[in-house]
Amino acid sequence: MTKLGFQLYCARNFPPLADVLKKVAQAGYTEVEGYGGIYANLDELSLKTLKGDLDANGLTMPTGHFGIDLLEKEPEQALLIARTLGVEAIYCPHLLADQRPTDAAGWFAFGQRLQNVGKRYWDAGYTFGWHNHDFEFKTLSDGSTPQEQLLAGGPDLAWEADIAWVIRGGADPFAWIESYAKRITAVHVKDIAPAGENADEDGWADVGHGTVPWKDLMAALKKTSAKHYVLEHDNPKDLDRLLTRSIASFKTY
Image (cartoon, rainbow, N blue to C red; front, side):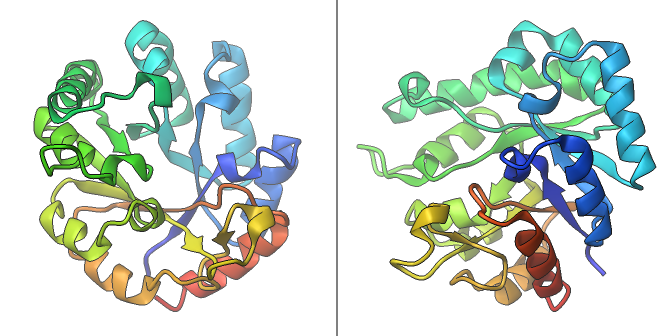
């Protein structure tokens, strides 16, 4: 059966992390995905302590989000984090609005930039790639999208496909899954609430309790290169509810 991991960013408003890890494990998860907020500035001793907390709860961290500044300006720190925590796949997760290109050539160049950044991590044995939001699927003036330009500029980049953001970007997730099946190495599993609902959770829903057709999507995704499926909800009100309901739904897919 395909395992569901948990993106720790979802629990940023429910500290302390030690308690979050216990809840995640108790709900039946064995994998978590890290993000910069919990490890970007830790020294080696603190990273080893975090690894000990993961081990104590029977958790591994096969995937992690690493910001572009960390990846480019502090590669030794990024590698220390990945090595110490047991990360296998490194994904650059976002680009701030004021840093985003505005045309096809700019996005192609950004893909080239990521390709150059990735060389250091590929050489060290890691999967390296990009995690999307919605802005990558907004049509540019030439009719293309930032996502296709980015992936063309970085031909060796893996893709952690955040399916719900693809949908929010106005794109067809099935078409993207089919076209880029070999590039998809991880998937964010999240759900979108029906229109007008869950406004206090930014319109997101627990997996299986929204509008995203996850059963059909999983059938398509199982034909890709995806190794890791990671639960995410950007702003949950109730962490226990999110953890338990989402994994119960996922087990039916």
